[in-house]
Image (tube, rainbow over all chains, first blue to last red):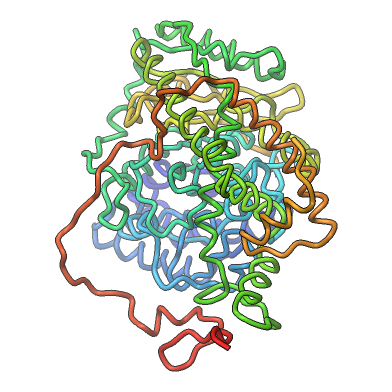
Length: 485
Length: 95
């Protein structure tokens, strides 16, 4: 047995039976990080000392019989989550020396259970990207093929799970940033409903779309982490005050009579042949499990990417106005006056993709264009939400591909931002509608690259999505394959 | 859609960004392509459709007006690029 291969619930059992200690598990992870990480680039910061201190504290807690399901489990967080006392960069030069004075609620909740923090994970700068190539701290490689991207923006979070450098990780999803890398790296990635998990202490990109979620080896771990993270937080007024169900209890394995919608707009002619084949085989699996399929239509799907790149960039241009060199972050040394300090600090601190999106958002919000671009996009957002509301009147869950192709090559799309944006075509509508969705491994391409299946649920329908994904996982063996690295 | 270098300069000034000549012409081309793509939203008739600002409809979230502990001056200033006593120091604003 290799401790690094274990999932949360498997490691929990061994910690509980004292077969393994948290210190042993943590040391195993740290030594694997030392040997494997240089080939992947999934971490920005490894918190070696803190990890061992966390593990010792967890072992004491286990010995005292005060164990929770996450006690002593070695996890890592996307570098977008504030961690008090641990540098948090968001993948940007502008925050390269930023040490937060407080922690994100998501991390606080994990700490209450006594998790071990292994470190902070690489990501696209300010979560803007689909390939992890926009990080100021170097690219991340896909553990299944190191010439390919891991997806983004939570690319480090997915690659670390696939390379067994953490038992599980957290990411954030604004337009697909958990699901697309999970699909490309062969792990389970869940984007909960907007408002299900607190965004307090999560560095903001597009506040009406951002949501926190887990990247894990299997669906059970996803349910465990969602249960730990979900709930109302007085510090995030957009977090919703509805009861948190027992997500693990939802994993019954039973999908008999489940009505699964297949949207015509997602099964397009340009879909990669291997992706199409994986979808067909998944449909056959669900049929054999007793699920029913219903053809549905989400007619405004084709407008989602355009809508997203107006709303997300507009919100980003506003959110990123705070990086002005005054209170924290990079300040240019040679400024002639205050305005010059703002301009130089921002221009030196931000990378090209962040500048491009700030420019687009500023343009969409600027005088004379506000109604034509920003308000128009918000009206189309209403139409996209209505598509889902109508579709869910007749189905319990919607099945689609996560991405139109498996992971693309490093450098393939860096010079063509529009092509990069279009790779998020199947994940973006979910963020605009604010509902939940999950990516679960559903096959491999001819060249051995993982392919994910997306299950979209009703708002706060995480139990149904997890149940459907779990049943699929029980019936298939895709999630058991490991990247050789 | 055509975005000129002058348009890029105007938007950069609004966004408090300074771009090199190379960046200006690169962004002009890329923004033109992206804004050309988003033009497709004009195909849709959105008359009478209300805009969505937030996925979850909510009213103002009120709480009791109670004093709570805050992080304090030392922590708040710990990341300050420049400071003096308990203040952030910036270049002179009023000449």
